[in-house]
Amino acid sequence: MNKKELVSAQEAVDKANAKAQSFIDDIVDEASFVETDAFVIGSNGALGEGVVTGYATIEGTPVHIFAQNADVMMGSIGAASARKIAKCMERACKTGTPLISVLDCSGARVEEGAAVMEAYASLLAMAEEVGETVPHVCIVKGVAVGMTATFAAMADYVFMSKDAVMSVNSPMYLASAQPSIPKLNKMVGFDAYKENSSLATDTYSSAKDLKGKLTQLLATIGVIEREASDDDPNRVMSALTKKYTVKGALQALADDGKYIEVNADYAKDVVCAFAKVNGISVAVVANESSENNGYMSEEGVKKAAGFIKKANAFGLPLITLVDSKGFNPDLKQELSGFALKTACLFKAVASYEHPMIGVACGNAIGAAYSALMSKGIGFDYTLATTAAVVAPVTSDTGVHIFFTEELKKKKVSDSKTVEKLEKLYDSEMGNPVAAAGAGYIDNVIEAGNIRPCVSSALLMLLGI
Image (spheres, rainbow, N blue to C red):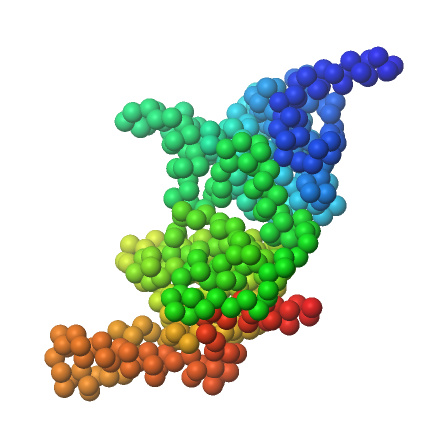
């Protein structure tokens, strides 16, 4: 091939991939993207095989990236395109760099028969390897259907554009079963997913918006190195002692009060967030006691377990802010396997490989205490605020166990007596000082001192 032929071939590839390459350029550092396998052509003769692969930098940090190209065979998956994508993923694992996948795929090239099913299987197997090796951020730019949706679900973090659709079954088929034909992005887009599952993590409105969010995410989880915050690690938030809120606690903990909440609209009884504390990237799981009557829901348990597994893969210290009465499933939930969900949570915590700090901020009752802050499950350092209640059962149950004689003297319907006994139970049986005296709680603190105490514990546990 002479120079003229090479230039002609390159121009043809660039023209075919123009939109996909432009999108990549918009979310990485200027002029940093280097394309790989640009001249791959499968049996169908499609230029680039409907996918652009390569490497680039974001804020100077290397990443591997691939973007499906809807302008070539509608971005569909075939054997050749799958091999091209798999090679990009393998390079990410080998070099230890994050993977960014951009999905816009009409599905499988069914005319390839068994070969395309093998191709999809190889990509999903590779996605599992990536998940155990490097951070994987998936961007659903357009359409992700069939096993492409499964691929997205295996990522650590999923951004969806406001127009994107994602479903295992054909969205057109799903729409046909509806009483009236909805817009596909309303039916299986981000707004539909955000309250029903943890699959879609965040949305974006433009490439510029996405770049900002992507950069913030990678910096918060410690992939991108930035100068440490000058926020005082000993900053006290006295208002938190007067009135504890999850939002206030997260703002108190995080450097400059900034954190990234994950799946904020789904299972609101559990709050999951990435943050930096004294310059150290951490994962935080907190109970929101104003939701679900103070109990962890089935969805909340699943959300916490999934987030904790991802945080472990990222190598982050885990901080829990416990304020929950535990679990309270109804019969239907029990029979549908509620225990399996709680088992996943306990497994995720028990197998955590990095420092864990638990803080009882309100109710630390029963299974919530055991799963989210106990020394027995593996927590390295535990704190309780002066307002915390650490007990095996809730106060209303505890009263009927420990104060039966007192209740006999009064009518059970005497609400004042019950309320008085509940407060007595909390102060005597649920007093965190008693748990500290037994060695289960390392320190009892004012809620406003969460940041200095956690900052100090992090330094100690990390040996910094």
